[in-house]
Image 1 (cartoon, rainbow, N blue to C red):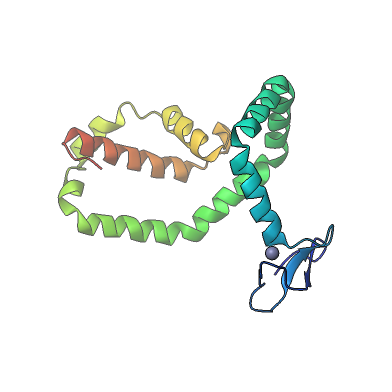
Image 2: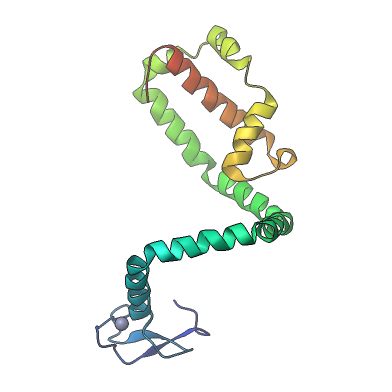
Length: 173
Ligand SMILES: [Zn+2]
């Protein structure tokens, strides 16, 4: 479905952009233009003026860097709770899938997983301090160090350990 405050179903446009087989076009409330036509037009314009647009964009960013940084910090501060909730929910929802995929991988490449015995595991663990793993997770998820759930750290640490060991044993990919 579409946002009824922004779009409505109107007469089929000249290019025949049909909305979900209704024989009608999704038109913008603001100016009655067909949404698909508008997108196509914007795309053509962008392709034609690509360099000019990107130069303008980077000039704007340069000029307002301090303000943009401030805005990003504010946004992070105001939304990091939601984000944390989202990441946790996603993980909880897909935990079984993660596990099943790991299991499939173990069955498919048993010789690789044999390398991950206790002795090797200890060796590989030495440099994988909590902060190191947290740093990586921070870059991936954007979560603050203190917000990263411990189970996610364990998960990532095990994953890193395995890739390192495999590399050491000459496996690539
Ligand atoms: Zn159209």
